[in-house]
Amino acid sequence: MQSRREAMQWLGALLFGCGLATSERAQAASGAEAAFAAGTLARVLEALGATPTADATHLTMTVPGFVENGAIVPVEVASHLDGPQSIYIISESNPYPLIAHMSFPDGTEPFIATRIKVAQSCNLYAVVNAGGQVYTAVAPTRVSVGGCGA
Amino acid sequence: MPDPIRIRAQLKDGITEVHVLMPHPMETGMRQDDAGQFVAAHFITDVQVRIAGREVLSATLGRGVSADPLLHFRLKGAAAGERISVAWVDSRGERRSDESVILAA
Image 1 (cartoon, one colour):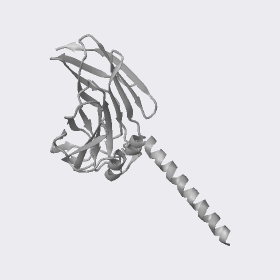
Image 2 (cartoon, rainbow over the protein chains, first blue to last red; image 1 turned 90 degrees about the vertical axis):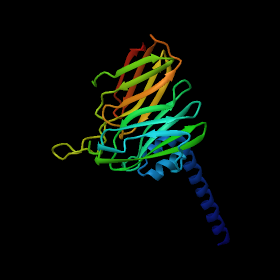
Image 3 (cartoon, helix red, strand yellow; image 1 turned 135 degrees about the horizontal axis):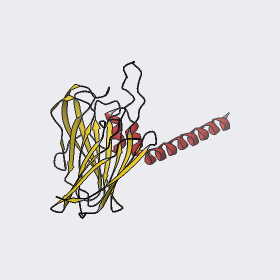
Image 4 (tube, each protein chain N blue to C red; image 1 turned 45 degrees about the vertical axis):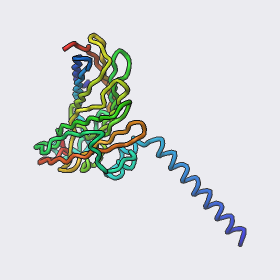
C-alpha cells in the first residue's frame, strides 16, 4: 500500500509540474493574443501586465466627454516617453475590451488618433508599454446609443 | 474587392503627419441584419505602414475599431517624395495594400 501511495504522489507531482510548465509557455507565447480574446477589463489588463491605476504624467488620453453615436468615438493617445513603445486602447464595457494595439518604432512619435466603438458609457483605458515599463491612462466617456450593434 | 486605402502624408517642419483611412465594414459579429440574423464577424486584424521600405507603424486591430478605420500619427526622419505604403489583412485573410507619396506642406 505504501508504495502505491508513493507512486500516486509522484504521478500527481509530475502532472502538476507539466500543467504549470505548459500554461507558462502558453502565456508567454500569446500575451497580446490572449488580451484580444479576453472578455473582461480585468483579464485584458492582466494579460498586458497593467494595473488600472491612472498615470497622467507619462501619457494623455483625449476622448469626448459625451458622444451621441457609440459606433464612432474619436480617441487620441499621446505618450511622453522616449524610445520604441506600444500603445493599447481598451473600452471597459465592450464584449472584447481590447480594441487596438499599435507599435511605434524609433522615429515615429508615440501618438495615435483613431475612432472606436463603445458599447455603453464607461471608462476608456490606454496602456503604454515602453522598455518593459507599463503605464495606464483612464478617461470616462458617455454614449447615448451603444456602438456594438453597428 | 474593398475600396482603395486613402493615404495622406504631409511633411512640415521635419514632422510628417500621416492620415490613413481604410474602407472596411469592420463587422463585430454582434450586429443583426434586417431579418434578425447575425452578420458574421469580418474585421481588419493587422495593418503595416512603411516608408521607403522601413516600417513606421504596425497595428493590430480588434472588432472594436469603427467601420472604415482611421489612423492618424506622426513621424520624424522622412523626406518629401518618399513612398509611403499601407497594407492590411482582415479576419478572412483578405488583403489590400496601397501607396502614396509624402508631400511637402
